[in-house]
Length: 368
Image 1 (tube, rainbow, N blue to C red):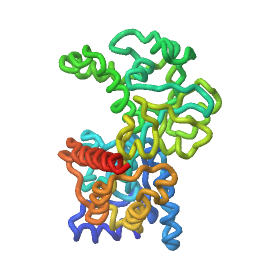
Image 2: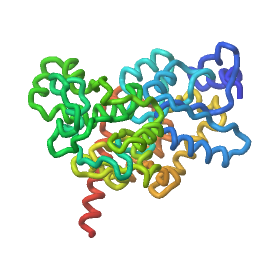
Image 3: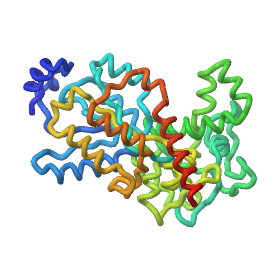
């Protein structure tokens, strides 16, 4: 269906759908951009969608990184912009405001499942029990505002192996990098009481001190291809990789997860939020494109049919949402609830998930 034809329909429905791209073209296939972590799940959904809808064009799924994907998504509405953004972190208020200023005013946020930031090594390679504090001291550019002098893991903590620090991880555009900062580095940084005082006196200095990663070759940015990180650590028994749990699951037998706070990165530990690196995964949808792009609603329905525990996406590493959260997200797919800045400023849904997961885990323990 051409966007020029849809414009008349959109106007009558009160939608703010701008004209087609500058060349006057149109698009009949779904286009989603964003997170490399969400990519394999979105691709699987796209393949199932194509099998179920042989008359429709296969969705185009691009791995651009969360930040890059949301930037493309927020450029505007029309055939030359993506319909969806996949994200391994929540959209930022600043990104939402960019969307709004560019006419992307009606957005639906859907949490599709959970993932974990896995620290891993090759099978038979280096094995360590990590903590956020250890990771922060090893990777921070200036740990606690001081010069970074750690060359080996033993320099960080004498109980760790006396081998050079070498970590392959995600780039600054990746949602995995954002989650690394929020869930691990900042937590490790805040273990020092001086950092709480710094946060009160100079929040920008606090952010730099707690989240900037060293650039001396000990931390190696491997771009948006998590499979490349897997390959790198397989080639060096002392190297550590950072990527989404799904890649750990996908490469079972070739790589091994490193425990964090004594908790292994497993499906059950992520689902119960026992694992410190557990995080939600999202897709964002332009409501203005729902009627303009053939099959977009059906594609969302396909996600819904595949995200259950034990379902097709769980088999490739997606951790299913708690039942209450899944029911809420199902409602959003059907009703297209509109995201607001106030929603993004609140973590109410995630807190409810944690409470539900904790209660379920307690119930399971009680029944054993």
